[in-house]
Image (tube, rainbow over the protein chains, first blue to last red):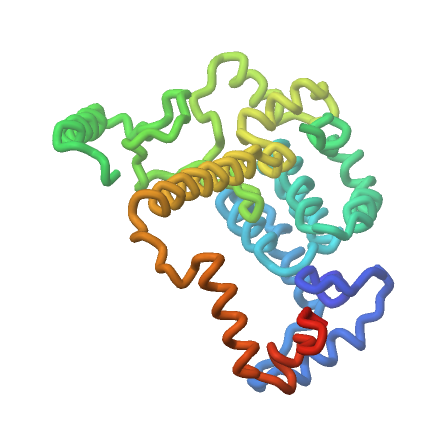
Length: 141
Length: 177
């Protein structure tokens, strides 16, 4: 959903409301190939499944995270939730904090995305005991 | 790498041979010092701080002393049991710079602008010296007297009388309009 609503490469979008149709449709109609365009739900589900692998290893977490950050979007809270749980399975708190820093940076000028993500992830953060960079004072120089 | 002299290349090869012979498989820069030296082994996973690559190929500090190791053990338990300092320590074990530290502004622009002005200044001095010592003497046509006579001749010839020079001259009162 965030991919549709928040095109980070453009600067015109401000609302976080679910105004999906007007952004998915132009993409589909501009598409020159007849390949099936993945919907936002499919994209999210694919990534949630990727990070939910019970025996995920550190390499897969690293690859997945770096690839996800490479996309022109801010990941949905549910993808981040499963990534943080993957960090927990790998006993890697540092990577969990790094992921939070990375999505804050990914939001770019849209300062309202990160607080929303933290708000949505709050139950997970409390459950797993992950402190945000702000809690640890690492958001300042 | 280009500035390696043959002597240093020889030293590098012998160093790599020593590492290979020890068979420890230890990475070249895994001794706790992480400055970029010219003997970085690119065949091993490397660490880097990049905004677009949150998780590098290896942790920052992979040679752990006993306190670090015990902290890593504690990390396997519930994270709610870790204090803030321990969490920060765990982060710093795995990563060198935080995102704000990576994005910190540098003072490089001052060097750049300063360097630019210095170059302009030197260029100005060179140009000045050149005007004085290199240029040939000015042609006589640039003298004030010559220019005045030239202008008078142009006005007498009625140069560009409609829109140009002579149209701006008031012939009756012998002055510019």
